[in-house]
Amino acid sequence: MDQLKSLLSFTQKQQTNLGFGLIALITAGSEHIFSVFAFKCPCNDWNFVYGNVCLLVPALALLILSYMLSSKTWKLFTGLCLRKSKLCRLNYAMGFLCVFLQVTTTAIVAPLSWIAVALLRGVYFECSMTGANITLFRRQLCNEKYPHCRTELDKFPCDGTTIPQSERMAVLSIIRAESQVLGWILIGSVMTFAFLLTCTARCYSPISYMQLKFWRMYTNKESAILDSYTAEHAEKLAKRNITSFFDLTKPIPMKSPPRHAWEKISSFYKFRSMDEYYSILHKYVSTCEDLENPVVRVSVRSENDLSNPAALAFVDESKLVL
Image 1 (cartoon, rainbow, N blue to C red):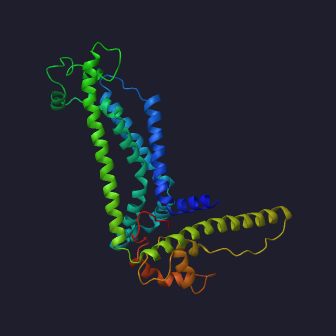
Image 2 (spheres, rainbow, N blue to C red):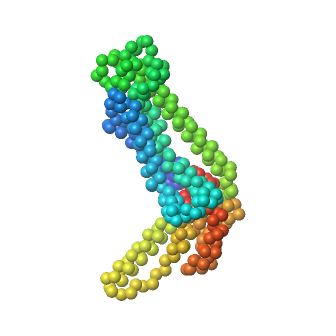
Image 3 (cartoon, rainbow, N blue to C red):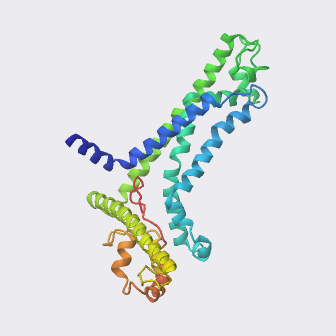
């Protein structure tokens, strides 16, 4: 039992890294299944187009899907068309770009995993480069030992050709080696960039390590409790309305946050070292003078909000949960 508790504790502490690892693992598995059961190089003039499409288009689809599945994306873009005047302000635009960069750093995990695994396997790159009509590349790849290479290079990935197998395998091994080199360069570059980005974020953190740890714990708990309480309140409101409809009675009064309150807590929170609040919800309930009618309070502070864009400070890019 103690070992199980230790494992659960470790999983909770490393949930971000485990999540990224799980995404990369699922992507690698999907790439393997596709390359084995669906991918088949045409071995003609379509090699270059087909290989590049199979390498890059799934990565693009995974990037778009990652954006769509991120709650931060919709938190950032919901109502943006009604705030076009704010985007013209430099501070607000910089805050918008900062949050979008944070979303992107998470969204690119899956597409980069697809490209890296595909390059390490080499089948897409092999198909693509055998169809590349680049004279210099074919001249460097082929030599006098392989007389069929330059004219029939696009047929090399396929079996059953008149080209000797030894000639085909010698040329294809060079292409696969180049593909694997590019794959390892991509992995190394991404890991180096992620490490430097994390170091930079931690270096400019306005709070200490232990306070940052507490902040992350608080935001996790607040998000979980907010989801649970929202679902419970929505269920009570729905039951009240349905009961009123079928019993033909006036609904019992129920308090719900007004529209302006929802709007305030839907923005991103910019944390500063002198702040004592750990989220936009924490700040709202602590500073709003009239929680039941915050319209006047919000309108008075609207001009000040323009100078402080709805953005979360880039404190810890590895765990941004707001």
